[in-house]
Image (cartoon, rainbow, N blue to C red; front, side):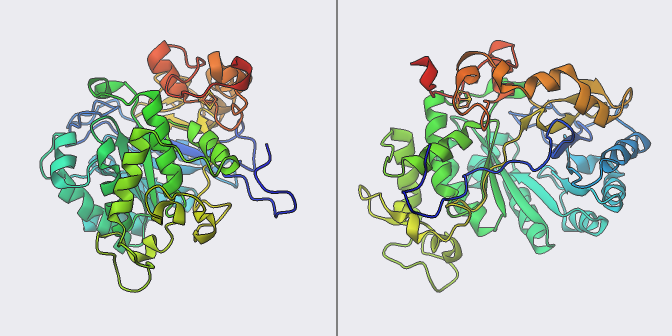
Length: 427
Ligand code: SF4
């Protein structure tokens, strides 16, 4: 499919491919160091509790896995230490320091609790961590705390985010998208851009763990949110988690730029962003617009967003974004291919949201499991997927969420139930 006019300079694809065999080494290792956490969020995948499991991997077992990952050589994976709350492990800074000395890129994903202090964050920074992520699920204390069912969590989280930026961390903010939080997205965008975070990640709820108690969006509503995210991708770096059809949408959007959806949820989200923009401004000068979006961000808002309602059209040329119109092109990686998860007891899974065990680092090297697991190898073969994903023209850059398929059909190779796309072959 051509995405540029004849004679024009070809644009870069709106996604990135890894430059190495994703079956030979992971790009990203998500590591649940502990399930202990002082929060008890309603959507928690890990169904966390306040105490540490005595069967958690020991410090020596953790460093052995880091040794194995480092032995892969460059490009070494990014290791994200998550939980639970990784701050519940007293050896967290030692683990970060050990990985950093092995030239692994170490990141940490703490919970927004009283443990997320400047002092504790600074210790991680000194140990070599370069990135942190926190979750913000509401634009205000009222909405965030009500979603998390934890009073005071919003203030703790936003303060920790600001401290992290001040300490020189690259900050990622994660937002869970459900029917309860979707209306908050424009307000969270404003908050995230004002902190400022370096990356905003929308996580599309998987009905697993306590998340079974929440109401997910329909496939059509998720499509609208991803179209909204595609617009936002032109002004700030964004990513989707467990919604790889975002890459299909970016490709379709490049090819059909004049097509502007008029579906109710998309229109509502876009209007809310428009309403936050300083009216009639050029976006230059001053620290922030009247509605709170920093001018450094609003200056980059393309005409498609900035223009008057009903006149959405040709803003691509006014974008300050890079790489074919996107500030950060998403990588073609997914559960088991490029990404792998290690549980607090050493189980290796394709993802924290796909509860199928490929092996255990107590029995075998993480590298051997990653390369040789039958499960992981099956997940790397889009031609073996069922339903629409198996015949889809976008399967090699999307492939659907294997975790969403498993949660709904009990089959990780089934079609992604959250994607409404009809492949050409199914017509
Ligand atoms: S049908 Fe499957 S592979 Fe195709 S875009 Fe949707 S989720 Fe992706």
